[in-house]
Length: 169
Image 1: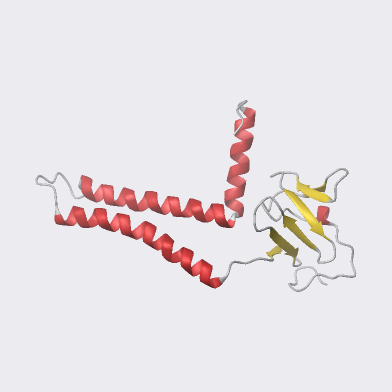
Image 2 (image 1 turned 30 degrees about the vertical axis):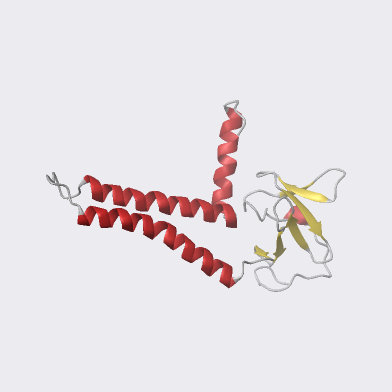
């Protein structure tokens, strides 16, 4: 298979995961673990089990196990969430962001301050702060569920800072 083309992996070639980037953080390289039939990332320290028959890697420390297959230039997830699940999560996320901020904005509209001091009053500022904080909360939950690579890299960086300061996370 030509490099850069997407398609099923070439099963006639031996599968050497250490030649590939880590599918979890996208920055590290996979290294074989001594006396084990597993690989670990040299950056994020994730342990991945290999299925040579399917030419796939599996992260077994979460349930259900997350798996990837090499597609020429990048890893492709074996278990993409069902569209109904993604739609449900999107609706719940929208409700978690819009409903609380909408309540605070409605209160700011119905009960304006008696002596407004500027264009943006405390009540409208509170509504904006509610919207921002709830959006951050939903983004954090999405990053935890889907394990976005940028989020994983941030976690790795924070862990390295904690270790350099002598603190364990």
